[in-house]
Image (cartoon, rainbow over all chains, first blue to last red; front, side, top):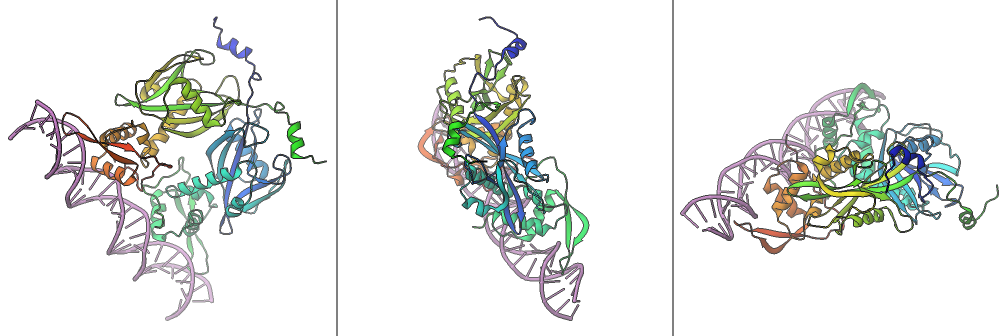
Amino acid sequence: MSKITEKQFLEDYNPAVFDRPSTAVDSVIFTIKEGGLHVLLLKRSDHPFMGKWALVGGYIDMKNDVDLEATAIRKLNEKTALECAYLEQVCTVGDSKRDPRGWTVSTCYFALLAWQEMSLSAGRGAEDIAWVTVEEAMKKSLAFDHNRLLNLSLERLRAKSLYTTLPVNLMDEEFTLLELQAAYEIILNQPIQAKSFRRRIENSKVTEETGNFKPTGKRPAMLYRKIDQPETYFFTRTIESLG
Amino acid sequence: MSKITEKQFLEDYNPAVFDRPSTAVDSVIFTIKEGGLHVLLLKRSDHPFMGKWALVGGYIDMKNDVDLEATAIRKLNEKTALECAYLEQVCTVGDSKRDPRGWTVSTCYFALLAWQEMSLSAGRGAEDIAWVTVEEAMKKSLAFDHNRLLNLSLERLRAKSLYTTLPVNLMDEEFTLLELQAAYEIILNQPIQAKSFRRRIENSKVTEETGNFKPTGKRPAMLYRKIDQPETYFFTRTIESLG
DNA sequence: AGAATAGTGTCTATTAGACATTATCGT
DNA sequence: ACGATAATGTCTAATAGACACTATTCT
């Protein structure tokens, strides 16, 4: 067997020789709205799963996406003008059954963003787009295996909220600690002691006082902002679930 | 726009219309051998990265692999006869730069298995196969972005060893608690107090006494076996790093 | 008996939870 | 001053770490 150079090998390489699964990225975009955790869903206007609700996603565009995360961000930007504060890869699913068209691979991300009034555009392939509470979303029969992806993302978010400051990424520019605590309580679906909660957040040093106050009618609450951190902060102990 | 049925749509569907990245699975296979954490590496005999060491991996076989995990297991079985005790998806990387042939996607798994004398076969595309300590492996310039995948897998293993019983999957059929403790110490690269360690493992109920003893020359040590658990056990608190 | 390794008793330090208390605002 | 919400003081409980101590084996 005569060896050729890598340069020659690459010139001769024909990418069409082997069958490849199609590859997509789907994102579970979380926000807190009206006291509940919501996800962004699209109603499909085309086959397969026409008329079903689905996560925000689509195929990798090899020409324009530099990497998987770029695909996720591009798809998000097609639907809303907002930037997400946090994006994390959850898992990749791939098999011959999840899409009736055959073997497909999809990498699932979850995104966190602060809710605000924003324009949503369903775009190509969708007849509707909406923020849906996670409870409603899980009750629906979503397209593909998106119920499973939603579940896995929600579990990841819940698990990490017990020992990290992830939920600060759901906060707006300025927020009170009670608003942040409410975000944790909504995600974890359990009440948290205010004192322990403040201790944790203060020790984490991921927030700082802005010096402004939010008028509540009664005693105004201190407003905080996020401090940009390169890494997510991990608490030394988890929030302990109620027994 | 006239709507067709989903059945008609699928019959008309041509999977070759869009360019697709090639999709692979790569696994970081960990074992403990001679008091050190080792990974299984292959020396590539073909372009690209000919002559470089690489993780165990390969392309998805859409005809024969039912899902991504099946690809990982198939590739592992091609190299060794052993079954791995634990397989976890770490992440998926995908971009246009990691492979000189163009846009590729690779899902990385890490596997844990108990070391024992086993035959290794390099197989097609490899001229050598070997267990290499993680320190040596990280010093090498591995093929593709496999240094990064190795690092991410090692970080995942280290992080989870602080708060789960994952390392029991590195143990053989019967093992002593000191052997398990040694596995933790090797992974975490720090000494652990024997008393605290035994408390954790006993509380976790993932092991049970076999009634047998390992003769050590001095006082024999109790032998334990794993209890099959559907889920990985999470400690309520992490092992605290040395300050 | 002595040496060595296996395994335990128990004290300290840390920190999450509970909840009573104090602080600060508008009216 | 009063009511309401924001924020704190401080006690208790749980548990990880430290390390001295006991247990069991072989020679």
